[in-house]
View 1 (cartoon, protein in one colour):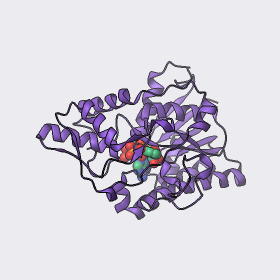
View 2 (view 1 turned 90 degrees about the horizontal axis):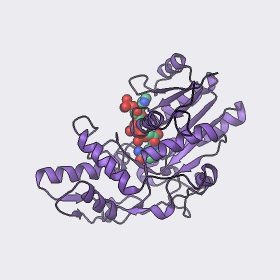
View 3 (view 1 turned 60 degrees about the vertical axis):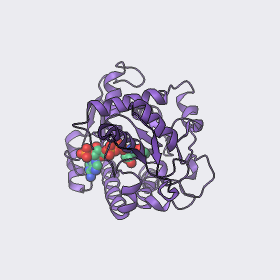
View 4 (view 1 turned 90 degrees about the vertical axis):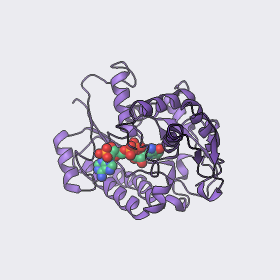
Length: 324
Ligand code: NDP
């Protein structure tokens, strides 16, 4: 039977990157489109997945054999901190509807997208797949984190009771074209790109919240897309896989801001507002050892500066239509 791959959240940062890779990699190659495959990229306009009936209709319309489940209420530190209940409930509803409908419709495989926010706040680094449930998540985003963490519980329960082939991916911070560049509610990198753009345009200082010390691992959305396609085709186990660059590729917010100044050609420097309580978690390095041992150590990640430049260029070329 020909595969029909439904990507929920197909119009977001990660969904658009999967669409790009499927269209641009050579057909039939490891990450390109295979003969007989149909890919559907669904948005909330196709179905509000918080609603069980709309979810059922979406699945009945496309009859997916495989699902990459990306749809989620997503936001940066400040959005998560302000709307914990909304992040918890919307994401729990979306995940429950997608997984239960996939079970009822006998979907062959579902990969759901978690986040490194699911990991305990107090845990020995680096983060590895078996540490997800070892303690409570960081308080700043516990609504989102608990909803995502529950997907791993659901995957195990669906497998044990009904034999479902459900699994999950845990990406670190993602960036790339089609990101949300909203100044208040976006993740740190797109928000800084937008701030830097405005500082350049208005001749004002480029101010960065926090003291610049936290470290983060960023993965380019188009690299992440390849890893999802690999996981869809080549990985059949319920346990999650961390999809990330190497631990040694952690970068500080200070260095990130400096790189953004460079790619945006800003005539000035980033200024840090120096309040450590605006920082979020100091660092949360994740290991990509399991990933590399499975996909192969020759998998090529895009160099950070190239990926950042592509993202900034996309933002500048699409400013009128980007999520700002
Ligand atoms: P985006 O915010 O860019 O996109 C979210 C997608 O989900 C959009 O397609 C949106 O549709 C859809 N969506 C939101 N709410 C609903 C709903 N109620 N019903 C149906 N669809 C809905 O997210 P990302 O691409 O950044 O994130 C994709 C996945 O990756 C998420 O699960 C997220 O938790 C995870 N993740 C993201 C990280 C990041 O740094 N961005 C880091 C780690 C994990 P529409 O376009 O119509 O609004």
